[in-house]
Length: 165
Image (cartoon, rainbow, N blue to C red; front, side):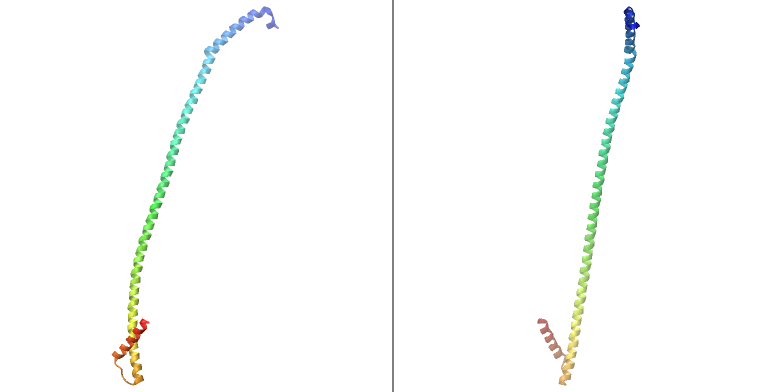
């Protein structure tokens, strides 16, 4: 094997050194700066993406807060509308109740007045019929005509006695 021949060690070491130095210079001046530039660009892109992600996160948080506020405001407004509607319905019902109560009171009063008038008229008619019937019956029984005043006094006395008992 030629590489193990001791006479060729010096030229091999020389060329090894020349190759190493050239490769070192190429790596130092060309390859490593390009790799460094690529790594820097990648780091800048990563940092930029992280900043954008943070901004988007903050924006999403503000949008979420605005949405929650909107939902809360909408819910509060709906509750207020429902409360106002309930109050209006209650007030309308109360007004209708008061109106109907007043109307029923008036109708009841009118009915009581009519009943009282009918009762008084019926009592007067009964008194008149009782007076006439009593006068007719008494005149048939005793064959004498009794005055209307006497019969009316007797009927009134009898009716007053019945009312007291």
